[in-house]
Length: 401
Image (cartoon, rainbow, N blue to C red; front, side, top):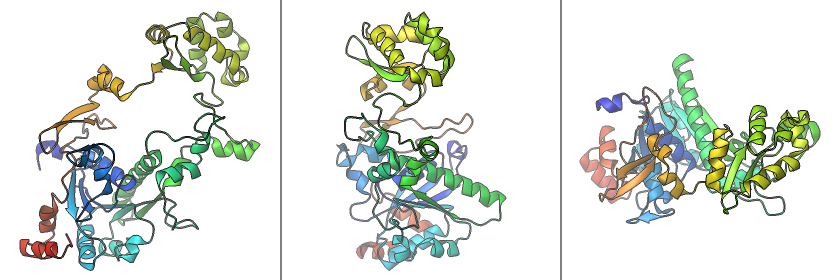
């Protein structure tokens, strides 16, 4: 192992990924970025469907290259007995297994939690599904779009006079991935400091969304309040909104801290509002939010975005333009923080990938290689578990690998 890889915090941790698309694979991607050895199992013929999602380069998705960086691709047919035996052998040497099949699928194939944990009592298994491993909805197919609806997010997203809208990414999937990663690391800590046995982590997509819905449930339980769509403003927090500048560009201003509100009002020439005792705290401002928003809108609407930002920044008021990806690519702060990194595709073409989050001061994550070609590591990984060249050739002839 290279010296740089030894310094990665998860070096030596073995992860077996049995999922596809986003929720399971993104969880293992996070572990791979910090040094875990991730063996990704893919169907022999076409691989993970993500390979064909969105923009393609030479037939392969650019999304694939970023989400599957640092992973090893091994092709195995999970539906056949010989393929299932390969999974058992790999899982017996793994620390973590991550899967996002519909509940019961792995059990049908004889590679569920009971079977794998019997082979490897220290195993940690992350199970991500639409509705969880139990409950009346467990067998329903679940994608992030549906989870965002059931979790309460879609109902509060958008404008009140229009249908609910989605955010521009599969947020339900990535939230579930984050909870799955946290669960895996917590379970690994317990393995080390507890009774020495593994456990499985049950993550439902809708619950991952539901868990970040702030005060939605207690407000309903206490007051019967059903939060509705509020457009670009932040409900119950004042002022925090998106405002149209005189040049047709938008600025987001978050003046909802008590001290920040006073500085904002002074900056826009409304000292009267800054000194109004009724507006000194958020609960008072919420009652008069229309007056405050109108004052901010009137000030912003007569100025260019390039004039608004420096005035508010000088007053220490949180504000910002609405970035496009072109803005991101040109922004010096992104570059200075290493959040856009140049790598090479298999044909030598350059590709920009997002930097790694979070930033660890002593053992930061790395992109060691971009997403692998289909089956690129099959020979290497299967040889490590005792399947020699002749056996691999026989398995390949039968379509098992």
